[in-house]
Image 1 (tube, rainbow, N blue to C red):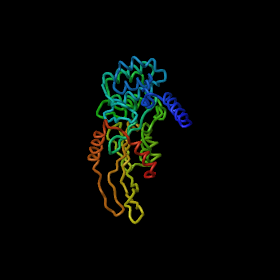
Image 2: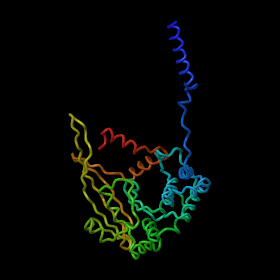
Image 3: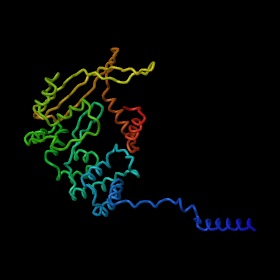
Image 4: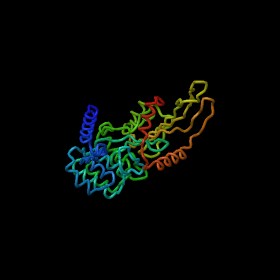
Length: 330
């Protein structure tokens, strides 16, 4: 009888526990509902795919948007060499007419096209360009230029024009004159570098400066030319040593030493630096072997690489961070 009582009590305890357990344990592992995107996310995603209607419908409710930041982002969508950022969940689409409408809308809302300029390096022979927003628009979506120019500072317009002035045109030097006579300066516009500044890159800081500034930095030129009444070219030929990681032998990594012949070329219109080039024309190894650099071939190789990467996922920063974490990059 005692055994029977123990059995019944155990049964009742088991039944009570069973009745309190969830009937369908699978529901405890259900996925959380997807978060509703914010208005700011909706607008940025619409810009990414050139969806003007969605931008227009939602931008007034997105109170946390910086219109100037969004303007720079919008213009970059139509960069022909653009790569997809890691945080972009969908492929970008450049539909130029819609992109221009978005640019117009942002300008009307007070986006500032004068906030900053960019030091940009062009091609393998290294032509430095202080790139304004008008430069980017004229290259990537010219139809939107009419919305940008009326709101741009006159010095920035002069900077845009004078760096690409064609000396075969009448009064091509007008923009350099305006720049000089109005005491314009690149430093007034919060210039930005897209990468680490190397020693050679510092030549770009002389864009917009006077001949005296070039000579103060580099001295008397190796070669001086005066191709037209209003244009001068100062060329400085320098031998510069550089080091690269060499072979790994017997537990030691060596260092290879090279001597490069580098030409610093400054073009001045009416006394204003309007173009800066830095060309590495040859390189000599430590053993004495000299190799001439085919600049045109190097340009074509660089362009082919950019075209190949265009539109692909840009995970270069993630790879760099991974290498740093593992100690393979210092």
